[in-house]
Length: 460
Image (cartoon, rainbow, N blue to C red; front, side, top):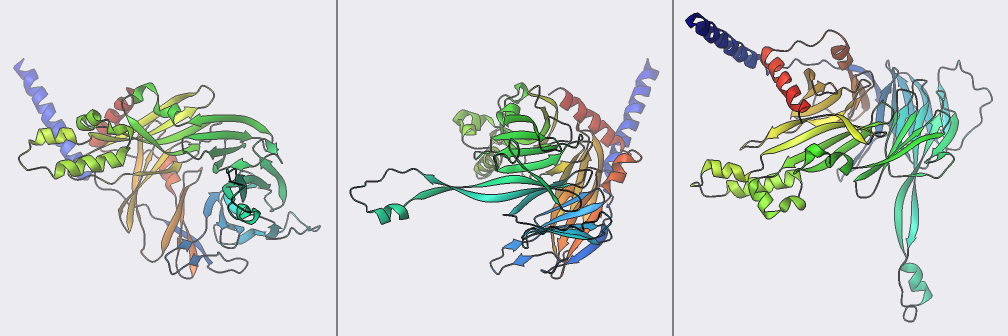
């Protein structure tokens, strides 16, 4: 019996020692080297990208940059054109705003194409596996607001001057083939139907179908459309923030939808949500009905920080909101239910750690999170759809330009651009190698913590 006690004690000591050793190496995050692929000049010529810098500090650069099928597709919002370039930097297609020109000698073997289309304003873009390009074409619609006017005291000229209009951005989706020729125009009911209102996101699912998501003015409802490659509408669903927030395990919490996007799985969307559990003090005064997450945190923290030093620390801790939660939820539109979700917490104290930002998912629904350490360094964390850990890597940024448009490609690679005075530089991080090759080794402490988090997520 005594021998068993000694054995258990010895085993416990070894485990504790291993945890300490693991903890010492936990903060060692290996840098993920970036590839500088190519640069395009800043300017207005054919193969240049437009950039505007105004004295007021306003900055306008490339609106969207996508990496698809080994090509970069860039929306030049200044010159209203779309540029397709290879990774060595050869521009092989430009679709530019202007009057369409019929080209009878259009050959598939041409290595460079320049096409024109009479755009209103280029918005979002997406590219399918055949390199067909889907472009949001935005226009402003003005609707007169009905008002009651005293016709006895106002003349006709004044009536015309005082008319009020509601302005809304409406959109169509334009489909171009890989050579830049227009194929058809898609509205909310299919080819050449009524335009979309407030287009929030466009994606191509794993079946090659176009998915369009639109939003409402209150930021609490979204409509999901799915179209065949021929432009026929296949599905339409409307979802609200309450569809996820009011799930049974979310009782007594307040939530805010940070982002919502379709996944590659047909009929499935992803919610990124922030949640908070209010303190006893906040619940008593019922302020959770008026404020959300960060505002409650700041208010409670400042109030109790300014109290007299004689207040008991345990009593003071009860007044501060306990935890801020962030969650990822995969929602199935057909069954109207959350089919998979996980969450993580950020405890509050005298020092609050900065929050990771969700930046997207790859083709396997692995989730990517971004966190700035300082102005020249960030850390990216990649998790599986169930919340289990894949890898964590640091990114270094030179402070000699403006970094923007961080994107996750379906293959798991990360891309971004940097703009300096003369060029737009294209970069890529090959994070897909980390995901699909040999599994990342975990320290003993990380292994235990991953199991604990998995258990907690499975029981929420």
